Amino acid sequence: MKTKPTTSSANTIGIDLGDRKHAVCVLDAKGRVIRIETIANTRAALTALSRRHRRALVVMEVGTQSPWISRLFESLGHRVLVANPRKVRAIYQNERKSDRRDCEMLARIARADETLLHPVKHGSEEMQRDMLQIKLRDNLVRRRVDLISSVRFTLKSLGVRLPSPHTESFAKYARRLLEAEHPDLLGLVDPMLRVIEEITAQIRVLEGAIDEMAATKYPEVELLTQIKGVGTITSLAFLLTVGDPTRFNRRRDVAAFFGLVPKRDQSGDTDKQMRISKCGDAYVRKLLVSAAQYILGPHGPDTDLRRHGLKLAERGGPRAKKKAVVAVARKLAVLLLAIWYDESIYEPGRLAA
Image (cartoon, rainbow, N blue to C red; front, side, top):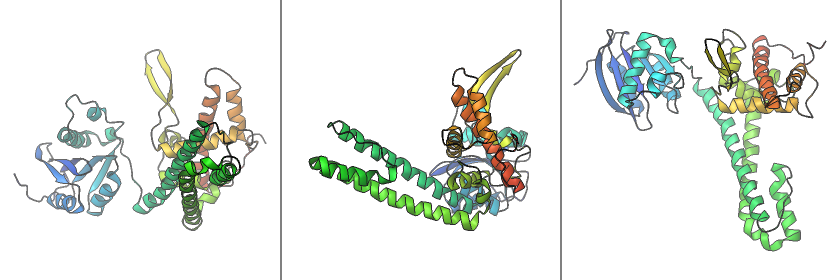
């Protein structure tokens, strides 16, 4: 059954995104199904869908494909909602789950109440590309750590224990040590040492590009790096993920945006103490927690943030130190947003003064 192109903005298109194909459900103004179909994951197929249902509301879930597809439909004149899949229980807990049911459910929820989808706003393509540079560097760093661990465990099984020098100099240090004391083992691990050196060189190239990008395109990074423990990568990842400092009604909502607030299960007189939600971008959350660990660590400067965290840690109890780190990360996220929004100078000991 073919459908004629429509010009009504009352139509709603629900799309269940896939890597190769998308399931599509189109509802009219009265909620009746106009068409359910499967289309290819190509710009041509998506553009043809747009032409058949001009100015319709398009609904999809967050996924690998959602950034560029949502931008495509917006450029074609549609209003787009990108649903948070963790919030839409009607879809992920459906007893008869299928792609076609999911796309219809997305469209019907959007017609009933758009807020139930907890819409997510993707950034621009330029910001996505810049963020990918940071995450590619992180991938290389993690691969290097895995290789270093592999080398150390290989040699440890043969009775050779390598100390833990700085990561960037590990290959050079290990080669020098093996040449002097165990030349027969150098040939065994030399291929991995060469790969580690090549990865280190590529990481340096990416770090240089990231520093240049921060200096030329994102001057706000200089404001955020006023806080000791917050480097260029942390501040730049924070900026690119938030996108717009005015997006939150309250500044403290940025902590929930990165999943740093506890989940809640309250009913009657029962209000359970739960762990943090871990919503939002896991990578930026990890960076904020790492910065909080530095602030509370032995080399952390004496600041209001550090005092707040140490005071919480002194209370004792199970996981007191971990709770203090998360609390500092939560306050750090709010502080970064405030400095960015106000373009203010950071005063590390303002409260103590």
